Image 1: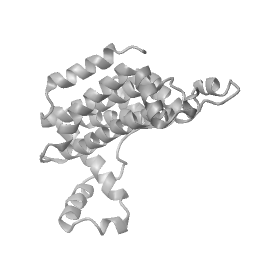
Image 2: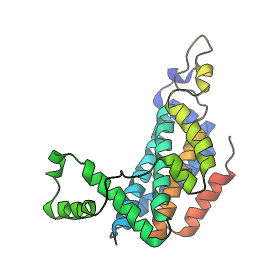
Image 3: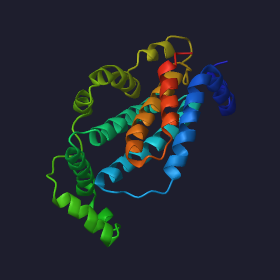
Length: 241
């Protein structure tokens, strides 16, 4: 039976049976991230605020990847996994810059760009005190955009190989240009939801969500460090099932 002929529950069961370890790693990661997202916290300065924005998005992104993988939507899951990679890059770009003042400069540039790009009608919905806060940040920052290119960020972080390999792999799938398309279209019937690549995309998603979480927790100290290390090790040890 082709996956497309299955009910959703049947297909989800088949995906989980095909990639049990990948789903176990993702489940463990979400069990660590969810309590952290829900923890009450304050933003000590603009850097804390910017990192929190990225962390919350990373958590939601990983949850989305799990759902998309369960549905067999490889291309959409890869697109969000690539976004998780970008979020992790942005977090490292701001959180690990040296010297410390550079971290603040980068986070202010990031936040200023968000305010500058917010449409005038949307600004009307921002509470006055908050609007003053955002405007004060923007007033002190040149209009140079939120971030440099992700290729430049990864090179600066010492991970050019990540751009050349992981980012390229995810972009191929996201753009519909993965060579696996040939497999789907080589038979008498097109398999709309193949099981290939799903586990790999899911584990990549965990890797990059935890990258954002690591930077974030270096500032907030909410997630137990051994929990992060355990998940990262499981990702490192994972092999295609």
